[in-house]
Image 1 (cartoon, rainbow, N blue to C red):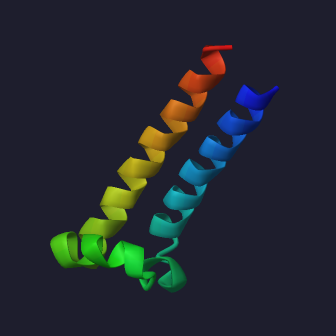
Image 2: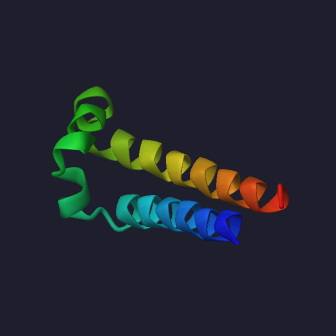
Length: 68
């Protein structure tokens, strides 16, 4: 049960990251924790980075479901 809840939370975080990058949410990219990605990759590069990160997070969520 706990692993299922954890997997759903991880999956949701991945979806959130993808949506934020695809929809170019200002509140997401103006967060101080996202500033390093903007400095390194600029805005469009950071969007690509967070899309890839979201895909990896979703994959990890599915893998953790498989462990059950």
